[in-house]
Length: 207
Image (tube, rainbow, N blue to C red; front, top):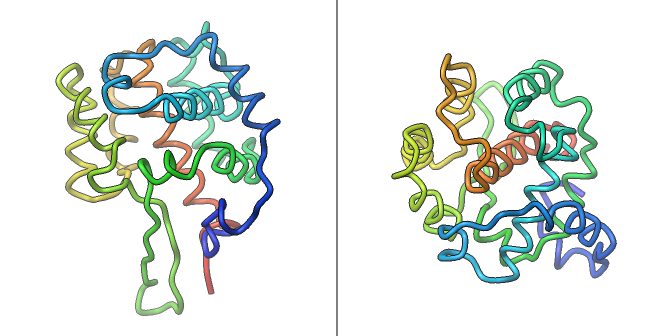
């Protein structure tokens, strides 16, 4: 399955209930909701965020709730240096299929970008859904953290999940993120799931 046919839910009638259930079983006990999450998302969307958070921490980062705070910075740098080679591309697609279409559409929208003048064709990528619930959620948490505010401002300016700004924050001497906070964990989860997906050449390059 490629981004060229990224309408997962209409393209295939098959769902992945076992995958979704396993993600929820891994994450639901430790998922701590917040007022910002409850104010912006319904019950189904909150369940989908449990799935996304659990997938990021356990499947992508290969960490757990106990060591996430202490190991995150080292682990994310290591993953980037390796090109996220430990992540299986099909697991990202299964993650997308395991959440509801409505939740996906509140976080992401699919955009097409033409290649440079020296190349042919185009490629597709995932951008933040303009005025979607996720964007409004980010706006709601900006007063609590200066780095989140900068990240959100860059997202609005570029209309993209700016990995340049994220890399700057990760490499800063003082990482001003509350890594124990569910809101912040979800920000990282959605950013890096998007970053990996868009930079995996088997999923986003078109003719």
